[in-house]
Image (cartoon, rainbow, N blue to C red; front, top):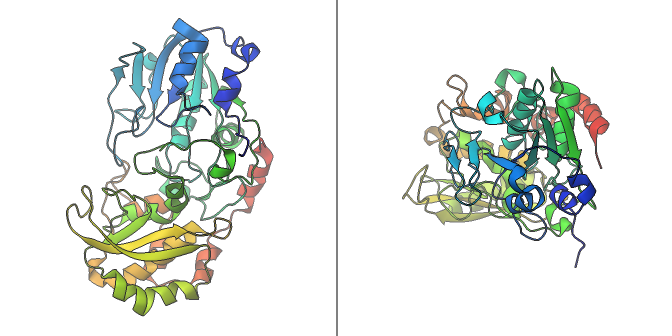
Length: 396
């Protein structure tokens, strides 16, 4: 059996001296996947460590319980029925904690499982929190967790700041290679106008080359539609289909691993065209399998969809961002007038096309529409300046 990586939460729980450094009242920003290596949720550990000084809980998008589906589905503030303390939603009428929410807090811990992809919002909940607390006498402590896609591979275009949104606030590539603690470090060094009082409690035993299974840690869904580790690996390939009227599998048990549309007959299309088109790209590490599925909610609810499941065969050679863009290009060509881009709003942007918000640029939509080449796609992966910044903040 592989040795388990010790999460930041595990390190805190096992170090009485470290615990004693936090003298005042404590709050915790967390979600469903905020468990330690023994499957115990962070809130229980905080009750054990801090007792009555554990005074508030905060939850990100999808809620503290991680049960709210999709974008622009807000969650309410409440009082926890067991801990009897406030649970504040940072995906409600506000994305930034208010002064009232932060009253009476001396140390605010952040323990959230990220998925290593720019479009995932938890890193922005963290950086908005850092910006808010820069002017306050509150210490922010990030309990670090693994990047499930590993900490070495970078992929995708840099965010064009003209398309910044809550699913892309900083100039990073799609697969950014950072842990959530490293995102906090990069924010403080390169993006913050005023620095917060922030520290990271590092993991023990994590290496940058590790995929999530290498950690020996349990996987819990960090958002409602990423139930398996494989879902996190296909996410950079499938998330952009949220910007279209094709289904990305929401309303099925294979969300963000499949894409489809009622007008696709997948078996003939795969045999006659798609298999060769994908093979001709030279992209490796995956297989597409023709399927028919029935979404129970969201796009095309209760309508049979033909489509494809993306199977990850070799994570070392799989490049999900490129696979997803090429698949979209081919489906755009195949569906013709039946292919539709989703209209605004998306993530509270009422102006820009959702596909452009997701991709962080309009270049990729135009690449799809113009039947762009793989070489042109690769030319968009220019981020030498990011690599310099990335190398300067690495914690491992």
